[in-house]
Length: 307
Image (cartoon, rainbow, N blue to C red; front, top):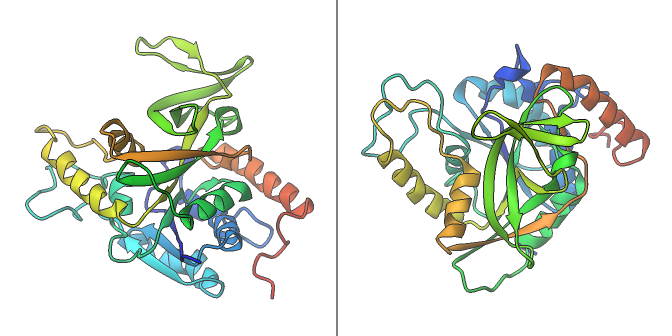
């Protein structure tokens, strides 16, 4: 059986969550954070290693809160995402304050990840099904007429909304063969009495189909993705306009580019599990109650690390 790696993006600071680091907020009965449950599900699905993407100033905290505990169950390594970690020949634009987004986060794993790998966000709970679906895809051989064959967990939009404000989701177009055709990064999607809505280009709220597939940044990649991602980062930096201090190199947008250039197929693996996360501070009580319910239903032990 092929070995596989779980990569967790945990370098971001969520401004909408308020003070503190939302990825490290205790949610479970013994102080577990959402990452504990993701790692537990990944190991149960068959993943052999965990790589946590963080920042230098968070590294020791990350080890103390999660890494030292998890490494008793599965090998753990750390990748560092920093603003100045860019290819030779480029400079950080004056005035730029934050790192370059999820594409750069995954690039920071180059040299650390050496197997097919799954990418997730640190502050999202995905459910057990998606981990198993992606693991099984990554250990299979896939032949096609394109250079790259990846996968993503396709969540149902209605299962991924927050009760406390708008969220950003990659709304997907999927063909009749279950392949991803396009990803439309859509901001400000809110719950409505009819289902969901978001702003159009003119600031008018328009309905969103709650049954559409969306990307939650849960991707399955082969190891060669890191090489093409690096080339894409160079293209991204070369294309920045003077004075641009905010543009981000985003994973969904780069994957979409590979699809449009007919370099990659992405299989959408549908999961009906209900997502929950801590986009907003007010989401925490819902997450805590959701975890209590999952424990009561027998999906998790009361203590994830009991012997």
